[in-house]
Image (cartoon, rainbow, N blue to C red; front, side):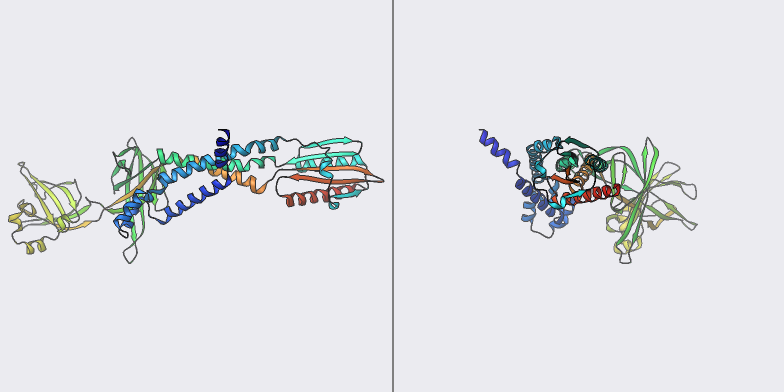
Length: 463
């Protein structure tokens, strides 16, 4: 039973497993980049066979970052990192707590000649100068005076031993942030016509709309086109409201999201919205002709005072017969006439000369003595917003900071201990330097050469 546990532990603690898992995650990330995801998969489906599309959909290839495969690989990587850290951390902790004794003959057994020099100085004076130098460079220095001379020992960079574990923790925090966002995050969208307000969003996963803790209004939508007719830029001027009061205004552009109330808004799409403004002309039999700009819901008095008329709907292409406005006219006596006013009424009459007899509500002169005519529509847009709330974002930010800190410890620091021995030698003193490091031996040797050269220079100046 113990051997089985030891085998499982060794399997999950292996670096080879980490390499395999990271390679698989990188492969799936590459697939997720090349294959259209989620909504974009609908256009991709037109270029492949239905059977292949169905297979890829069952394999969750079109929602790869939320798939069972991706979550399983991330979970295995988390287990691997935890067990690797637990397996190797005790050794790092022992090295961190290790206290090197100054008087250590072993480190000086094979000291090369370049790590020594003779100085015309007193042993104590040379030792004091070496102690001062090490304190400036290393701060914590241990000293031991013996019959054979003075021994000094200094340590530096011990916290770099934990750099790799900080990197491990950062990856675990990153995985936790991604899972937190995937499980508890919100992904939705909303279409807001110009001048209108939205208080809820539609979720991509379906179900009931999600109410927002605030309202968002589209004050204006602006779009610029290339000469080819393709959109160049589009922008939404938004106002965020709480309890009916404007709290913040913002300009939303593509790739420039806006955050408010814990939600992030992206400019995703736009389109023509129903209910735009229209230009109506009212002509009286044998009388004057009035022109006015109207919009859905507007109520106007008839020019002659016979009653009122209200615009009920504004359509860009009603029944594929072109722009039309639905009007309700109410006389002073309470009589009401509801009918449609088409912009292209003459071509419609040519195609169907008896259209007014068959469909009286298409007659723009249904309320006498007025004849309504539609001169044109002022195009109105809606803005399509992608709305996300990701509670894992702060967690991912923390993981990035941990990753940077861990990598800086690994790349720009290393644990080392340096010894200096000052011993009498006939009419001189022999100064020798030695060191130990678990990595970067060339860097340690260069550091010791700099220390030795600086110490030699200080001693020569004292003579």
